[in-house]
Amino acid sequence: MKSSIVIVSFFLLGLLFGHFEIIPISAVDNDLSLFALCCLMFCVGLSLGNDSNMLKRFTMINPRFYWLPVATIVGTLLGCAMISFLLPGRSIMESMAVGSGFGYYSLSSIFITEYKGAELGAIALISNIFREIMALLLAPLFVKYFGKLAPIAVGGATTMDTTLPIILKISGKEFAVISLFHGFILDLSVPVLVTIFCAF
Picture 1 (spheres, rainbow, N blue to C red):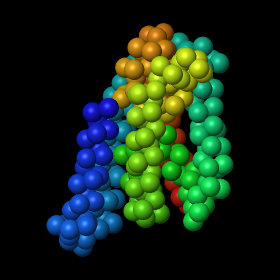
Picture 2 (picture 1 turned 60 degrees about the horizontal axis):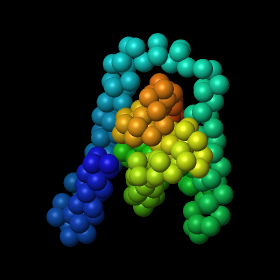
Picture 3 (picture 1 turned 180 degrees about the vertical axis):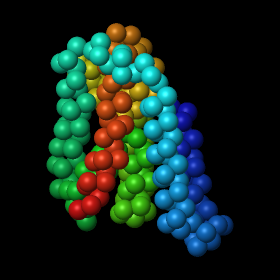
Picture 4 (picture 1 turned 120 degrees about the vertical axis):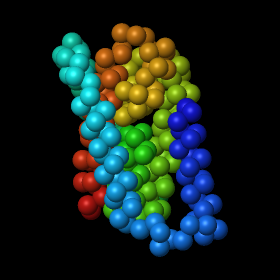
């Protein structure tokens, strides 16, 4: 939750700096955004590659739980496709690009800004932060009404880091490896799916 507040604060600070032209727009060009994106991708690869035991833990999962990230991806994209009909001026592909962030707001919003512009990038940032906050605050309700896997599906890519503690507390510690696996697969899918949907 704290990290979400920090990210939103920096976003709002950027809006203020841009509105009052504290930093000239010429100082923030596409090269800087691309550099930030490359650094972020390097850090993602570093954090995933640094844990040598992660793949070993994944082999202990009941094979039926391998379908959970697939169900999350399909469900999210179907929901985004349906909601796009209620959003004037936004295509199905743009809505699915935003949804493909799966809560990974820092990476997806930079990608979308790079491909589709700042407005859709800001929408991606806010919607993916909202997804993480929902997973953090509403996890008990998701478990009560939809079962113990529900907070993991809602958490999306965040289930291997920021939402993991609340998932363990509400769903149970036996879901730790499933949650890590789910987050790992969705983390890997974000740059692939966002790039595909932004290409249209």
